[in-house]
Amino acid sequence: MARYTGPVCRLCRREGQKLYLKGDKCYTDKCPVSKRNYAPGQHGQSRKKVTEYGLQLREKQKVRRFYGIQESQMRMYFNRADRMAGITGENLLKLLELRLDNVVYRLGFASSRAEARQLVRHGHFTVNGNKVDIPSSILKVGDVIQVKERSKNSPKFKEFVENHRGNTVRWLEVSPEEYRGRIVAEPARDDIDIPIEEHLIVELYSK
Image (cartoon, rainbow, N blue to C red; front, side, top):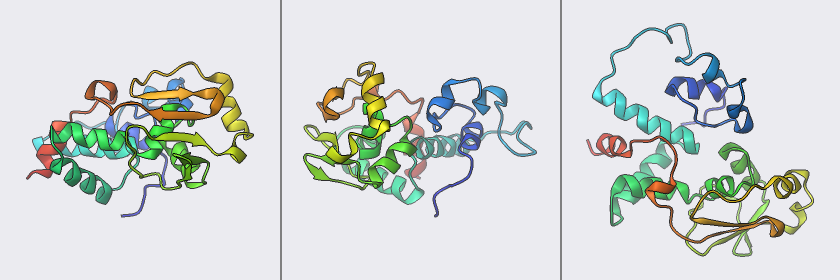
């Protein structure tokens, strides 16, 4: 299935909440969810009966849209999480949080996950000193993410250093002056602030 390339604000309206897909715009009065908090389309405002399957599907779609992944990737992550020790739903979210594009976003190098994916694909980052341009790369504790030397003069990254307000994610350590971040622990469920009921996704894929 091809990646969605339409207006991302429609995705937020479809889920009935902000998914923070547009970066800074999501925090302003220009956010379409604030103006039109109903699903897009001519039937968006009509009342619909939500089934158990519908609830499960919406949670799965919400996670896909938060992290910008396709259905095949979502299924792959679920199967991997199911084989891991611990709670499958929490394992799934942990894997998604440890994606390189999400880590770049969490470190503050990008204003959205979509922007982070683009920056990674363009080769602006190294992991443990090696160039990595695959956004879906799963990182681990101890990995060091750094802006490449030639990219440090970019206005984008200079702005990051100037406007850095401190790290709010406990499992990451940020050194803005060095354009560097490090994973110091695995993300716990309490560290993942997206409003998701992951058990519904597990129920959906377990059918």
